[in-house]
Image 1 (cartoon, rainbow, N blue to C red):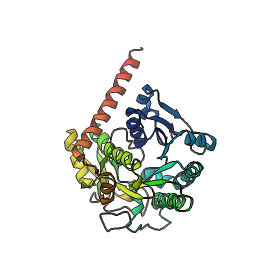
Image 2: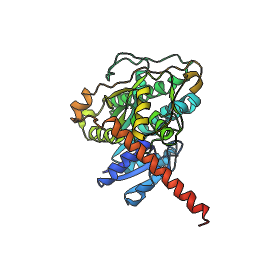
Image 3: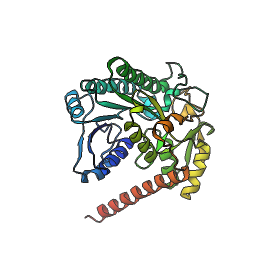
Image 4: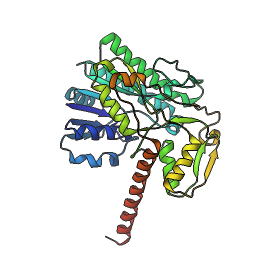
Length: 335
């Protein structure tokens, strides 16, 4: 099989590409590196069936060519991370909505299956947990740029489902809940990589708000497994499906667990949202998925425990630190 992954040099995209290549598939990666990184896919160059293109999906000619070459399109290209969303709402909306429209339009010409990566953010301020796929989406005011991401991804879903209903363009929409693991960057506000890097480097672990907000962290390997099973199932076409863990933890408890697992002496500091992001910033208090639909379609649910996930992320960061240190040592010796 041949697959196109937009955003293929990103965190989830690179892990998905790795799984597909390891099982012998041919993979085309398209990424402009706006949030992705060559470091995420450098190790994949050993696969002869891996092809990458450092271009935005706005390159319509290339996008059309790669869609034609592929059997399935994984659309993962998006603006991600709370900090990026707050600081660049125009980029967030344009990247998410326009990019999805371009992908759907290209795929629709030959009815290629499109996987749309959505997010648990679309549930907004809904407090009825666990969130089910048919739960109400409750957003804040349009004056709060924080909600631009959730609204744009909800529009992506409406658009994809409209292509399915009106044009019979096959789509699968997955709402990913706090997916974490090696290669995820903390640059745009992702909490776990930030906590782990701070702990390993002995810096204060910074918790935004009072730390009582809770999340469920899903290992990227489990998320990829769920995605692969959904794409392989006819029952998933035209559906919206939650993918995530149900192991709930407060952010304060996460900080303490990271400190414990890394053996860090870092302090834990609390920073008000107004200072971390913008005045009047609003957050979701709890974010827990209902997974009955995922289990019904795939007979699978993520189960990797949080301590194991933290250990994997910590090992990745430690390995990167050692590589950087070794490189500096070589440079210092004049070699």
